[in-house]
Image (cartoon, one colour):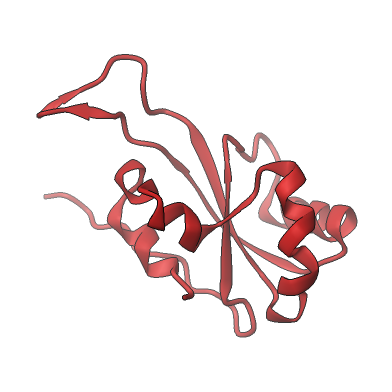
Length: 118
C-alpha cells in the first residue's frame, strides 16, 4: 500500500508558499532555517518541508541522471509578502504558484499542489 503524503498545515497568516530549488537543510533545524530567513531578508517564515524531485520520464521509463534534487518549501508571513517579492529573486527563490504553473508539479508529489495560494 502506498502512503499518500499530505501537505504541512500552514500557520495562520502564512499563505504565500515559496520553493527554493536545489536547497536542503543539511544538519539545520526548521528553527535554524526560519532564523536564517529572518536575519537575511527581515521577514518571518514557516519552514514546510524538503522534497526530492522525481526523474524526467520518457514514456514509462525514467531518464538517466534526472531527478534527485532537493527543493525546500516554506511560507512567508502575509505581512511580509510584498517586502520579500523582489529580494528573493537574487537567491533563486520562486513563488510556488509560478513554479507549478510552469510545469513544476511533474517534479513533485501531488500534495505540493495543496500549497497553492492563488
